Length: 217
Image 1 (cartoon, rainbow, N blue to C red):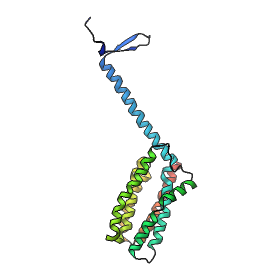
Image 2: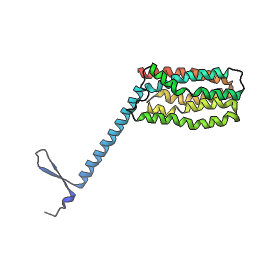
Image 3: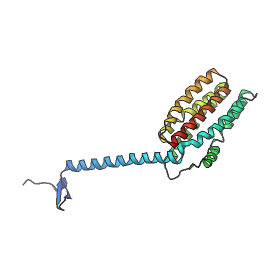
Image 4: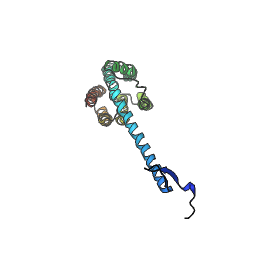
């Protein structure tokens, strides 16, 4: 019998309790199967976390309902006789209470606002904070092309919804993240600013109804 190095084999018990010898190819195959099983486990765990955050956060419904209030305030500002720069300034001020309004709405409709047990909550916060960087564009438009600032602001708001479509497994987020920027561009270039604000209120109400339907599905 030829010499066989002991490191080339691992000894494992068979059904009769007797040790078996597995060659290197079988050992590698077994390790690959274990690695594949671990990857599947990670994917399954990620899907469970996404499902958990979608259920407990009701797919961010509290933020969308709060944004309806924000856009109503923006409409009131746009209907005043103030100079356009003053309107833009107060429009920015109207967006400031979004977070406390969302918190208040979450208490009313019984949403876990923080959901600290789920690490994907931090990812949702990151998606939201990312929008703040794009507001620099709106700040540049503020004095440069003041009558188009609200259009840019609404486009930024709509575009930032896209990653939430993945996080909440929501088709509504995916669809409205495209519809809102496109319609904002068309309406903003064609009609008065207050028409754009009315459009955003209507879209946000329809968006909220779609999320309610998804949550009840």
